[in-house]
Amino acid sequence: MTNMISLISTDVLAIIALSFTIKFAKRNVAISNKKNMIYIYAATATTILLVLEIITILMEFSSNSKIIMPHRIANILGFSLSPIVPFMLLFFNSNKEKKISYNCFLAIPLFFNTFMCVLSYKKGLIFFVDAQNQYTRGNLFLLPTIICMFYYVLFVISAIKNGVKYEMEDKKILISVFCIPILGIILQILFKDLILIWSCTSISLLIYYIFLLELQFRYDIQTKIKNRVAFDK
Image (cartoon, rainbow, N blue to C red; front, side):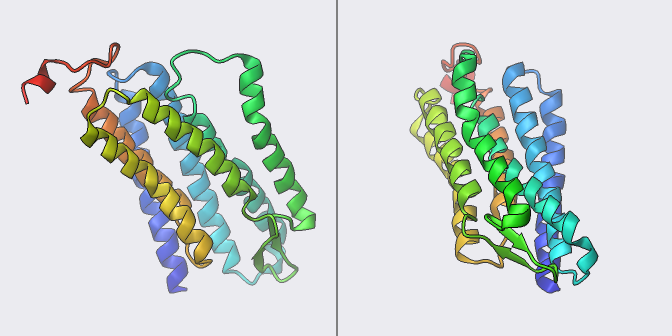
C-alpha cells in the first residue's frame, strides 16, 4: 500500500510539473512555433501516459476480477503510446520537412508495437493480466522499451548535431538531461517494483525546456550564433 502511494505521488507531481511547462510553452513566443508545438504534443503525450500509469497501478493493487478488461485495455494503451513521445521528439530538431515516405518508414516500429500490444490482450506477449487481475510481464515485455530507445537514440543524435555550436558546458548539461530517462528505464528493468520511466521522462522534458529558454538569451534563434548578452559574460 505504501509503495502504491509513493508511486502515484511521484506520477502526480510529474503531471503537475508538466502541466505548468505546457502552459509556459503555449505562452512562449521566442522559441519557434514548430518546436513549441512538438514540445507541447510530446509533453501532453507524456502526461497521458502518466495518467494511464496511475490507473494501471490502482488496478494492479485491486483484487476485483471485474476490472480485468479495463486493466488490460489500460496496459495496451500505455505500452502502445510509449514510443510516440520519442517519435515526436525526432522532429524537434529537424530543420526541414522530411519526405512522406521517410516519415512512414520511421513509423513502422510504432505500428508493429501497437499490433503486438493489441495481441497481448489474449496472448500475453508483452504483458498478461490473469483471471485474478494479477499483472505479469510477458516474454516480449522489453519490445516497447527497445522501440522507445530506438527513437530516443535518433533524437539524441539529432539534438547533439543540432547543438554542435554550443559551448562544452551546454553540451554536458544536454547529455545529462538525456541520460535521465535512460536511468529510469534501466532501474525499472532491474527492479520490477519501481515505475520510473515516465516520471523521469517528465523531469527530462521539464529541464530540457528550461535549457532551451536559457539558450535563447545567449544565442540568436535563427542563426544559432551567440548574441551580445553571451559575449558580455
